[in-house]
Image 1: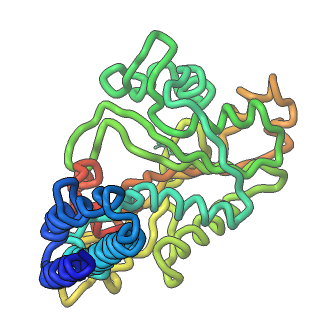
Image 2 (image 1 turned 180 degrees about the vertical axis):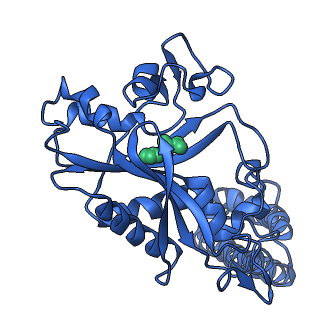
Length: 350
Ligand code: PHE
């Protein structure tokens, strides 16, 4: 009996040693230790043996069972370790490789960047930021800004009306009025935002963006306007820039000017021996409209804010188109590129 038990252990261990998969091991476990196997049978029969044989046989059979279970478990564990090792090697991902195709991670739109860049310039000059609604009152968009009753911009063929006295603002200038109505002078603010006009071609979209500027204080002159806009032009277009003021007309400024910046793409209108395409050979590029606040505009808010007494305070205002600045600065040839949302265009500026 004892001899048979040690034979079983030898045979079974040899089989376990030769096994190459965990499935094979499970089969061996059933073959040698399962309900119908010889060794468990011996164990079950121990109680029927002669009392003198019971002790040694029971002990040997039990030891054999423990030994076999241990051998199978150890081998099983070595398989599990090796299989895990193999999976880790086969499934390895090199996270340092570039993704294919490489994805555009996103970024601020050129208009947003330009708007923030301009805001930063004026924040640096001590200006605050003001806001107003895009759906605006005719009273603020035109009346308080000194537009004559039959000014052409009031026409429904130029302007989107929401009702008789409500429209989509055609410029950011009504924010001048709104801000003065709630803030006494001195006032130094810019007002960025969307504006709307019935225009749609290569250089006009029905919706575009402006930044308004307004400074009101005692003793403000056109020289302050010019100095401020020169600082702006240098910050945005480069330190060598000059500006010039040309006479113009706006209903809400007097005098009014159009402001040009010296061309940054050529020398005196000539580039590579040819007429410069950007400034059309003039050496100057128009960038914005401006002027001294018309006393009639102060008068329109003085009822609410008496400190805007045209006899006591002066001011200047300016308004610029953000699309125009962005296009000039980055040589964007067509306004509509800014709104097509073509990723190949957008990612150049991200
Ligand atoms: N609101 C004017 C426009 O849209 C620009 C402007 C603003 C001119 C402020 C003078 C002063 O054309």
